[in-house]
Image (tube, rainbow, N blue to C red):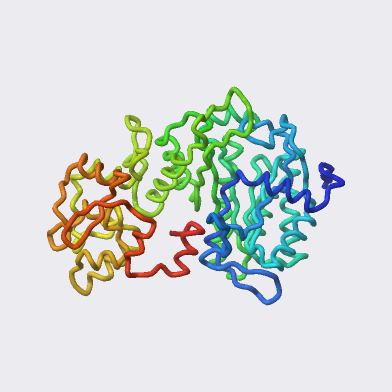
Length: 450
């Protein structure tokens, strides 16, 4: 194996400053889905609810050491700050340096896991070999048993990807852009087939390992936390409908754990890139995440939420509310008789509250006050439900009326003992729920499990 020469003469902290900053645009780094206890011989462990226990003041998870192996890259993707045509400071870690950083940060209780990605240096296979070597050192020589999420490099030797899969908890292959056409226009060195090939290899490896574990419980685990991917949103002209269809197809065909959506940030001056006078499309990213949640946990299909004639999400309503007001023929839903699947389609009712409703009504009919205690967001749900055949207040089952009340910003509807009243919402409105959120649920929200 060759050696990296870029950044020679830099201190470890100088490299860390460059390569941690270079990794900030990669969002696909959740740490849920892995359950591995400490074994008494190695450092670290993974727990079922995820390992991200520490958070910054603005809510970002900071318990994974998130770095690039190197920001040197032979590719010239127009949207990437690390493209080969950019004049930016370059650096590279050696495998031993990454191991040292990981262990020193872990011992100081700064982190509990590693997220490792890289630019493409020399070739995809050379880069993947360095990543695999790093993980092998961490697991065998440094005896690190904590969480590791690593990027698989498209075009690399499949055997290196296979070996890395037995060392990592989660792997991801970045789709980069939603369509092959977008990839061709902004990332001419990358090809859709090269990206999907390792994605399929990882999926097949997970299946084969599952069968092996059924026969031999002591067999090594292959990517036990599953795989994910990331798409840049807003750099090319795809509609929300196209993006959601791509995500749905990835979930079905490759059984991904997560698809991440990253709002395009214009870091390069290039005529091929959109101007974005309003800044990164963060609201659009938020709507896609909400819709993605509906695909994975609520039984919705992409075709239900959007269509070719209506290809973009409503900026005023979340996707579930928008679907509900356009399908009022399904409402109102009787809480005491509706199936679990019907409950999931009610705005203001989540997966947990739907399960609580199904369990609680075995002991008798529920009323609106009980629904609040079960976690139902009544200011959204009241337009779409009945309890014992009655609605909470006299409301019109009309699209314009419901949309007007749901989207009113300065005079949000609040409910007093005598019916509807109007006042400004405060940050403490949700505190009216009598049931307190548990620390475990707060953690699950933060790591993307709820």
